[in-house]
Amino acid sequence: MSEPVSVVTVTNNGVTNNGVTNDGATPDGATNEAAAEGQLTDAAGIQARYGRTPTRKKRDRRILWLGAALFVVVFGAWVIWAGTDSPDTQIDARDIGYTIIDDSSISVTFEVSVPEGTRTSCVVQALNESFTVVGWKVVDLPASDRFTRSFTEVLNTSELSNTGLIYRCWLS
Image 1: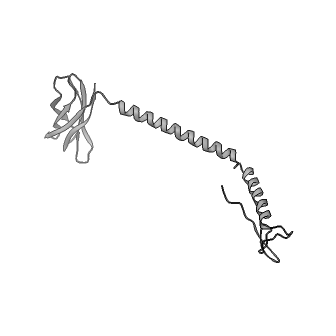
Image 2: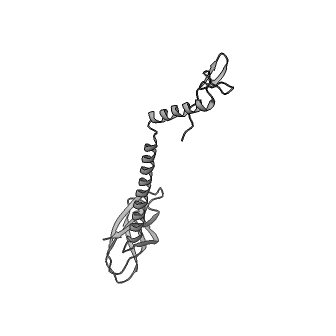
Image 3: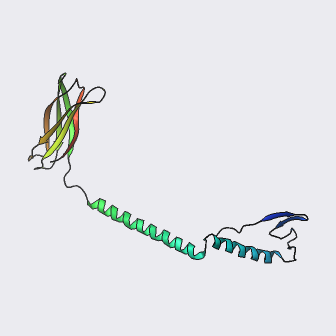
């Protein structure tokens, strides 16, 4: 709860705090305790005026706890879903090497690992010295009874390339 608001005024005979003089009495002879009770009543009125009532605090606290509980439930459901939803098939593609044949072609050798009997497609690309794609080819790989296979593809390029590599592979 916030501290009560205190009003300080200056009068001819000294500083007063909400009408309480330095000697502890109000101008009408009341003590500090009576002035403090009036101050608390004024503070409660100010709190109520601006919507800070005890029932509102309880409601705000209840909404906060419900929001936190909802977050925990949604986060827990996501963790369970993400933990059990693993992909059945994994693809692993690896660059083995490349050979620059001439100014307009390159040979790229790569290795693909997929489960037996799975058809796959891969994109092989050639890049120039400024890493611009100068050759691109989609390669369809048939299903096989081997997990890891090696392939070599020749790409036509629009200009001299200085590297060739696998861009991406997917199930087809």
